[in-house]
Amino acid sequence: MIHLEKISINQLICLVILTQVGVSVLTIPYAQIRDSGNDSWMSILLGGVIAQAIIMIIYQLGKRYADRPLPQYISAIVGKPLGSVVNFLFAAYFAQNSLMVIITYSDVINRWVLFETPWSVLIGVFFTIGAYIASSTLRSMATITQTIMLMFLICFVIVFISGISKESDFRHILPIGTHGIGSIIKGAIPSFWLYSGYEQLLYVFPFVRFRKKKDILVAISAANGFTTFFYLVITVIVTVNFSANQLKSIPEPMVFILRVFNWPIVQSLDILFMTIWLSVVLVTQYVYLFISARHFAFIRGKEIRNHPLLVWILTIVCFGAGIWCSDRQMQSQILGYHNIVTGIMIAVVPTILLLISLARGKAAGG
Image 1 (spheres, helix red, strand yellow):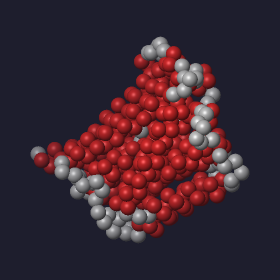
Image 2 (cartoon, helix red, strand yellow):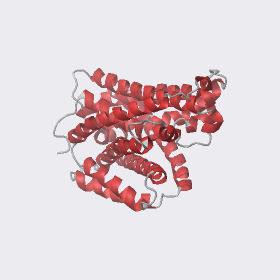
Image 3 (cartoon, one colour):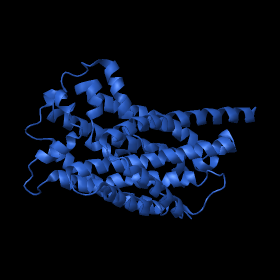
Image 4 (tube, one colour):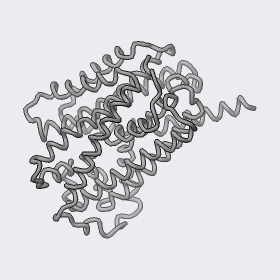
């Protein structure tokens, strides 16, 4: 059985937070700075607000079918043929997420730490670790994630200590709001993509132990709020250490800050951070891989019960695709496509499903 026991509210919070943060901590606010400049922190905040609105939609959809995960009730909304198609699309989306996380972080590790390590070996090791965890039960996966939360908190402390230094100039944030609301909103679009991870609620909703359904909404909102706060801290730290013009040419500003920070206790703080952060990135990878396999299991309508086999099949497919993604230009093109798909799968599709479900409910009631 994939679900020997239900997960707790605390485990849900850990799953959502660590799935959300991923690789983006090293890159923000590189994408936002082009549009909103020193107001990028406002774009990050707005992105969190938009994510919260989508969380409300996903929660309302899950609440209507609280006893089943999305792969099982999708056919009740759109019918069996279309339900199989939607399940396949979600399976492909989550598998693509798993792939993007690995190739993006592998690229960073390859350029900053493991210069001579072959690309295939790098992604192969990451995929193997993630697949091993994803092939277990949801409860086991949540327990591991809860343990990794400690690693995340250590990284949080490292980021905070290294980011506030004598070289920090808070005047880089001023004046506030000079780029205008249009630029801030434009910068919020790439910010919204940073918060993906809460869509796992579509699957895990019925497997969370709670007293009231509202507890799930409170938990996932708290997780999204914490992620928003964490992103704001990172954005402010980066902004006060670099000018807007400098940030336009620095893809991983947090790595630069860690590298130049002089801490007598530890040398090469950037390498230490990226090594610890790997465990956090792997959470995102194995959560998406797990959910991809669960959607894939219901493509034919009737569940395929060999979950570990599905996980390893998807891992092999992702590894094969990842072999061809070592080129940074190709990664950039794939990422652009991936961001569009993300917006559709976590915002548009759940909204349409909720509207159809409400319409069918009213028709049935009338």
